[in-house]
Image (cartoon, rainbow, N blue to C red; front, side, top):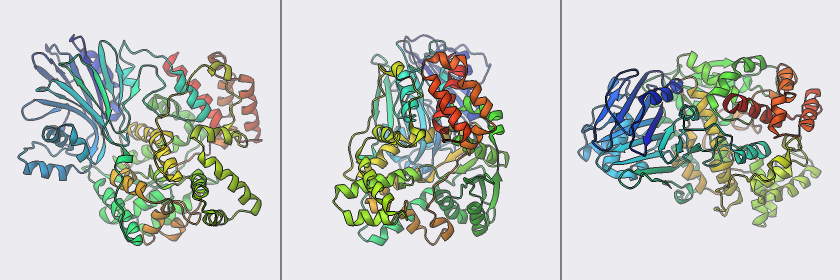
Length: 640
């Protein structure tokens, strides 16, 4: 896990090492264990591998920078930028290839030689053997860029689900890339201009990271499962293409119904075992929910008995508190539980650092819980954690997925099963009738579902936004088209690839790397994802239970108190209460500020009324209030 950056001068002028150093210093949290730079001339093929402040006389049009967080092979041999033995391939890589040992074994049989024990060298040799098809061999999370001297080409790629970040800016003169936006902002030719379509989507629909566009005009994100190529022999043209598509990689299913549960457990267990590979200490994040409990239970036999460290955020006295479930897991698996509590004052103290870590606005303060848990883990000697991220989006863990399932049953005219599902919700007959009609909203696109929710929930109302200001601003294009016959699988696909998971992945990366910690996500092993998307809807929701296959497959592994839970919390914060208490004056100062008013984004009077009603406890409007507050803070920090 690392931070990477680089510059290509398309006019064949010199790349400034000072600029590379400036970019790298912004990524120091991602790699406190080492730093190196490479400058190369694509014309005469001369190169220099350099340390900070080291003088050099190489004039080159390609420059790479790398900050290292040592996880696998802690020796200096594994430092980057790295080359092959002949110095023909140079690479900077951020992430981990979890199946690197298996790939390495295959490559050795094909005659390849290795000098290190690192996974980065495996990427180099796999590229030499398979070309860009090497990507299909990799199981992991990564963003890398390599330069091929013989072909005079630059090749880069991002993992299937975009777990590791990659941002770029492309102009007539330069192509520059980095692991975080803040590094690109160090370049004098990159402007700090807000991109209004993304801001509109964020304010109206609470959407982030839904496409290649960012909050900064001219700064883009290489999307998940995409690669890019630049042929330096043919005009330096940037060519981007999709190398992996979930829809084209579904898995064959077992013939026996019970085998599908065993297959699921087998795949999840394999994923966890791969993600335990590390030369530094590994711990687990434990919320007390089903997903994190599953990881703790399956990982426990492969860690030293009684030495698994778990890290949890708890909120004694609040309805969000999951202490009893955390304690249940700790008792059953003899782990070492670390529990952390914090409040709104802590958030205020950490807010500047939190904003600096993310570079772009985030939709609620819930990410602060994750931030604190990762910080807590690092403080207690852990450098790698296993995290349950992705399970809700994969296994229909959120309540709104049930609406999609009900609409699917309507589509199939399976009314008997529909009313069976509704009756299992333990709600009254009037509520069942209402739920029946709500199920028709499952046919609507995401943005229209939000508009429908606005009718009854203040969290979704948008009368505080200046509609006239945004009237002519288009929304970012949605890349999602109807793909799956199953309405539930379609909605899962939308959330998984566009409307939910990409933003959560961004939060997890910034929150962990802010503390020089690597977060690994076993539920996002591509083999498991492909398998689950091949299953029928009743494998995910059944008799009112979400994540049905996970509950059944791990029935013997997880205590009933956990596996039979129907509520959904996760790493949350009591932000509604905080906004009425410790953060009340802070919120009011921003909402009543002149700078917020002058943005013209808001109907300020309605926004003030929204804050007043929330402060009095009349309504819960914490999410829209935070979006406005966070966007204002972002403007002040990055744009003004």
